[in-house]
Structure formats: C-alpha cells, structure tokens
Length: 256
Image 1 (cartoon, rainbow, N blue to C red):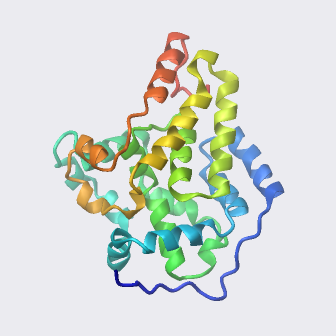
Image 2 (tube, rainbow, N blue to C red):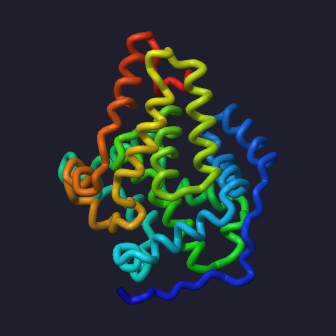
C-alpha cells in the first residue's frame, strides 16, 4: 500500500487537558442540550492528541487514503436538498434529507456553530483541520446510518458509538454524563446504561463510517448500507423508547 503524505502544521500544539474547563461547559450543556458550542468546548478541553491519532488511523487505510485524495467538501452536497428528494424512498440520501428538514437542521448550520470560536483545531490550516471538518460534517449522517434520532438519549448513545469508532476522552465524557442525566429521569426499566453500552458496542462492531464515500452512499438503500457496514440495530435503544412511552413519557419532548 502506498504511503500517503499529509501535512500537520509543526506549530500546532497538542491541546492540554483542562478538566475544570470541561466541567464548566458540561454544566452549560446539561442546562441546554441544544447548545452545540458546549460540545466543541468539552471535546477541545479533553481530547488531547486523540484527533491526531484518529487521523493517522484514517490515513493508514486504502479507503481513508481515497477519501483524503478527493477531499470532498460535504456541506454543499448535503444541503442541496432537491437531488436528495429525487432519490428512492428508503435510500440513504432521501432518509437524510427528510431527517434534516424534519429537525430543522443543515450541514452549513453545524459548520457555522463550529466556527463561532477559533479553537485549537481551527488555529492551523492543515490536513488535520480537514479531518476535523470531515468528522463534523458527517455527524448527522451518523444519525441516519445508525438509526439514532435527536432526543437526548439518541445523542448520548450516538456519542458512545462515535467514541468507539474514533476515541477521545471528551466524547466519552459527554456520552457518560448524558446517559447519567437521562437515567435519573427515565423509568428504571428503560435500562439506560444498557442503551449506552449497546451504542458503544455497535460502534466497535461497525466498519469505520468516516472512511466511507458518503456521496456514493446517498442513492443506495439504507438497509443495504447498514448490513454492508455491519451496523447492528439498536435493540436496547428501541426497547427504552417503548418503556418511556408506556410510562407516558415522550423521548422527544425535551423532558429527558
């Protein structure tokens, strides 16, 4: 396999661990789970060299090298909704666009949120920044491919899946705290710890989603893609939702 050369600015410093900063921003995120900026702050405060190690893992694979060579910028593709609506029902792209419109989201919106502050990652225009952008720009596609929605439990569990695929103490911390907060309010029978554990396990079992050609996946049947990527159905997650509804709780109401 040919070694791919990549550039990381030598002036880029390894972010130091800042647990107190992470805790301050975690309290803000607990108060408002929609405050995406706090997620970026927590990740920066705790992730250290994990992004660099993950990028090295990505670039060491033929699939990662192929995506790096193309350097496709996904937001304009994902925010061009008309062609995605023309795709067959049940396809990755059609499911994605319906999800984004239903939730009032856009790829450009996530870009804007991440760029509200420079941050350590954004301080240097190098290939590690490109990889960080790709991780950001594929986040909502992870929702589609894994089957997790956007309630509090979904986001926490998806972060467990993401941590298993990419590492990063910040991501793991958000996942843990999210699950802990939800478990305080959810019925015990929902077994929130089992839901989080399942998300982490499914992330380990699945092929690395970051290495996939996202544009090529868009017209393909979602069920077929999930099987190919070994993405297991989130059984414990579905059961937890059933338990919540049986107790008169709507997981999407913001009450969890």
